Length: 248
Ligand SMILES: [Zn+2]
Image 1 (cartoon, rainbow, N blue to C red):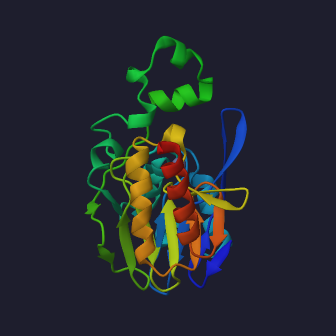
Image 2: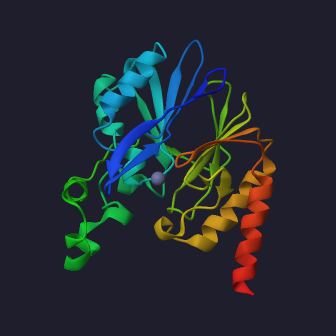
């Protein structure tokens, strides 16, 4: 789906827990370069190639991969992309998630050694395979909040920890697009905060949403749920209200 000139929200379909799920990496490009934000599940390289072909691009055109965080469904195909790009690609992620992404520590949410036998038994075989063969990729450069990356008209890093320790979102300056990663999800047309079951620190994640209020946002891309037109401000205020109600 074309969001604006040089910004495309991709749609990758994956099968997990007996359901088809759609993941939405973002492709940003100009005449000189293309970058990919998040990479889908392990094994989605062929789908990615096909989607890029439809846009008259190829894996070799990618100059960089930005990873919003360490989760399996975001870093999954990064290593395959690097291989296909003849190792020319630069992989970016926040320093707090780097050791997990590189496989020096097990991915926090898919750490089989931390699970009970009952929990492991409840996981379908294809997912169990993933848990035992966690994807990993070397991170070439670390990201910091407020950093401006000199790609495609400027991309600003917004530090949004909570969903994971080093979760980041990205603001595409030229198109005023927020690539929220998993800091926001879209469900039934409504912007919502991060999903509680998969968020490590919900208080921190809700606090992080305030960082979006400093930006002039026209488009929002959620990795889960897709495209939302408009400013997330109202949604953020509503989410904060809900949290406050729950606490009172
Ligand atoms: Zn996710």
